[in-house]
Every structure is written in structure tokens, then in C-alpha cells.
Amino acid sequence: PSSSEPSLGEGRVADPGVGTQRGSTLLSTNDFDPAEEAEIVRTVLFIVPTLRGGGAERVMVTLLRHLDPTRFRRILAVVDLREAVYREDVPSDVELVDLACTRLRKAIPGLLRLVWRLRPDLVFSTLGSLNLVIAALRPVMPRKTASIGREANTVSEQLKEFPNRALWRLGYRSLYRRFDAVVCQSKYMQQDLVENYGLPIEKTVVIHNPVDLERIRAGLGGIELAGLTPL
Image (cartoon, rainbow, N blue to C red):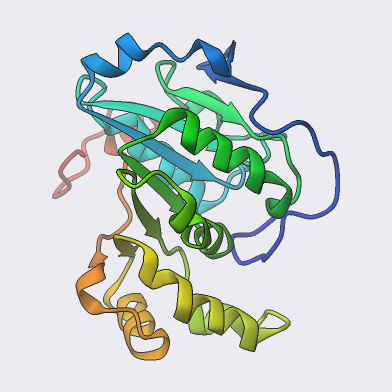
């Protein structure tokens, strides 16, 4: 599904949080080693709906590839890992969690259990519907866990395509302010959230999408790209 869809569609529902993977190796959720966490400064839980090839998912995978593993314990939770185009792009030392749900609402119990089990320093989510769920869960998450939402669309434009637009607007107005910060891809996105949804501007930050020049150069056979600086 595209990043503008409000749901993930019908389909299989498995027991959420059954297991995790480090790279391609399946682990039990009980196998998280506290000693590993003690060696790393911060634990960050990234959450995405799928890895099926959308731009928002590519951004998250790029961030995972370039965060310093000696400073961050990186965990990626995916609501539905089926047909995961980007699965092979996830670094082998990233812990991968399949919540195994085809609808976002069915993943909520497993997602909340995962957050409490890991007690991460930061939860970082992307895409509006998932962001709204994380923001709604904020009061029942561990107090020390900060949350950042990355907005992938200009909300006012996106909601024109949605049914029940008034309900969605209410969600954005009442819930997005619960985030510690909201990442916007552009000034226009930031302005839309601030002016139309009452998000305090001090809770927003504009960060343009990253470009993974190493992967681009590899695809071009090592040709140099003038004027661009690697991540």
C-alpha cells in the first residue's frame, strides 16, 4: 500500500511480538541481552508499517544503515513484514521484529508489550496513521521513553483523499502534540502542521530526506557525484 493509505488491508493476523530477528536470524523476544544494551549509549526502536518499497520505509532503512552501532542499539519493528522489498537492506546487526499483523490496530497490543519489554530511550515512527497510534499510546508508555514522529506527507493534502476527514483532523490536532518532536521533510509540511493543526512550532524540526550516496555510487559503478557529500 502507498504511504497515504489509512490502513494496511485485510489478511493474516499472528501473535504479535512472537519473535525478533537480528538480520536474517530469528530470535526469541526473551533473547534480548541486557549486557548488550549496557554497552551502547541509547536504544532506539524504529517502527514502520511495512518494508514493501515506499519512500518512508527507504528513509528509515537509510537511517538504520548510518547510525553508529557503537552508540545506538537499533531495533526495527515492522507491523507486517510480508513482501518486504527492503528486508535485505536492513543491516545484519539491527534487531528486526515482525509484529505479524495486516491491520495496524491489531498490532497495538504487541507493539505496546514490545515497548515495555525493551524500554527504549526513543521510539521513532513514520507515516501518519502509525504516528497517531504511537502518540495515542504515549501516556501508557514508559516515562523515560521519548517519542519522535516523522511526517511523510503534507497532512492537509493527504486528508483530502480520506473518509472521515474531520476525525482525522481531530486526531492530528489532539495527538501530535504528545510527541517530543515531529520531523517534517520541508518548511511547507512544518507550516501546515503548525498553522492547520495547532502543533507548537518548537516541537517541529525540518530535516530533508537523506540520500545514501554510497549506495548510489555503488549502483553507478563508482562514478563520482559532484557537489554531494556522503551521509
